Length: 104
Length: 165
Image (tube, rainbow over all chains, first blue to last red; front, side):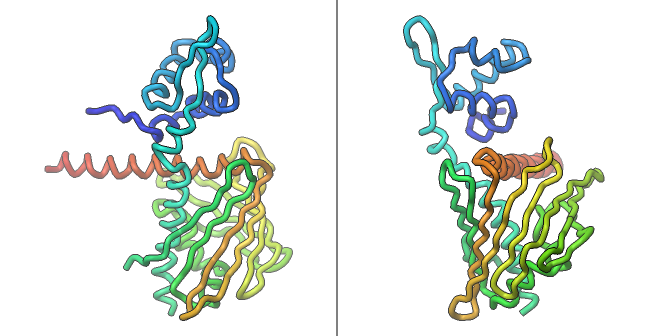
């Protein structure tokens, strides 16, 4: 089975959402990032790997350090984040349409 | 039959409010009723797969409400708030709090406006004002997680079908 590598897979995990929020505010080195988590460095690296594969983060060398950057364009490009929220409401309102039809 | 009315969500980045806008092919009185009658609300307010019931519903200034949504396994989530105004047929204002959050006090101020359109149609505009941008984005993200959940449910259905074949 092909592993899903899209924005939904990326954000389905709470740790990955925190990683994204952190680096969205400020680019971070792997060490600085790992300090925010109680889980092992390996676990954080695994999440980083998935996020990189989803192209939501990219690494950039700055001096001797590697920094993780948030790829906002990809987030926009891959999925309009409002869409599932909108679909949820659409689903409710479609049911309301039927109810209103019955009431008329 | 599915209508052609589209749901529009406006959530400007960095703001602590969002708007949900939708038109209905029904007169304003009726749409207002669907938003202020608990027997009708339970039929559409929750996600399709969850059962919704009202413990309390007092749609008038100073009243309050609480409803619960139950998962198939029996787990229940509560939502409650205070009714500030139920002005038929144009406006509903209330507070809203989801009880399933890790921390109490994340309250939303909701205003629903009902606008009369030609040909007995109605436009509903719901404005939700959150305490912070983070609160608002978390709410949108909850919808996003539901999107993920829905796609998983669909995948389960497809897999189940394949297995039966």
